[in-house]
Length: 482
Image (cartoon, rainbow, N blue to C red; front, top):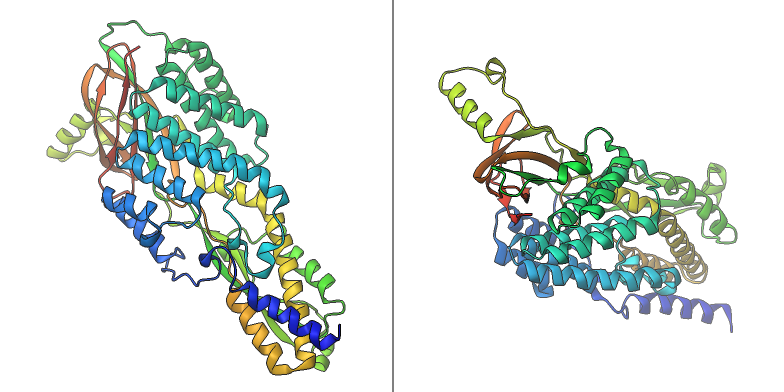
């Protein structure tokens, strides 16, 4: 085969790759907002924050309204929105579908291959990270608990424990706090189901993850039936987790010869992205392939556009000082009426038992997957540069056309479960039985969480989502009198 024919076939393959991918979204430009999120995904976050549950569920499940094309990611979105809409059974079923697909894809990802070389990693099915899989089971646990299905919640707790045991100790210390919360909520699920031994093991595992001295001893789970008080575990979710955004990087290539550029390409990209570029502010705008300036001037040069996914935090979340008990709330109202400060009347707070930053957890997932992403980016860039260089040697306009098409096709894979909260905080306290109002101290301001029905001698799980620190809370309650 003559070189010119080979060049034309290679260019044709590249152009064809942009037109025949199985998922149109893999190459279709996605309009983004100032946050870096796609417009449809930002609209979904807005619908959830506003409590527009029907609208949110429709946006999460209908591809015509911006739902993900990928079945697994769509199941995660559906489970999340249905959970906050109070559709517990539908939510649990959606998370069950997501878990089944995740099991299949984690096995498959080891052999995933050449498809994305022609375009981008968005051409591949979505594979969730380890912490995303764990959190899917956590929300299934919560959904079953809200539906009053204690056994279903305990089953999800066992799945969480099995996954954590399979993964082994957290390799990244920044995900240990998330694992501690998962272990603790598993203990709560077991305790609500009356499985005290399993609860004790889960609490003990949570304690080993860095919460020593804070978590209750298993003996605390023994409560007298008919007691005038009951215990409440409040799970507070706040904000939105860091999401992936597409960053553009220009690779300055020394010339049109591709004889040894592939090796330098791998070296430079590996050095630039192998250990860093996790957050969007860390991605270099321009990366020179060769430091030899005279060679660059002698041979000309070109810029190869590359797209890299990086994380961006939505915004900072104000510190949560603790839970305000009903008595404290009354004292605060009285002190405000008298013009006194909280400090002057000695207000007490129930401290936060556990805290977890889910942005750190998804960053740990990204860090584990980064070497694979770099490998694919290097391979894709090397193939594109070789084709462009060969085309330009034959006909400069043809090479420019191929380079332009490659730039359009090159897109970062920014898919993620961006509906997760930024933070999880757990508070445990004992209250008189009956309806009790709860509030939380966020940044020195009291926020009402709602009214919890405390079961005499029992345990109540009270999950609350604060979409914004200045917005009303969304509370859902599951009771267990044991």
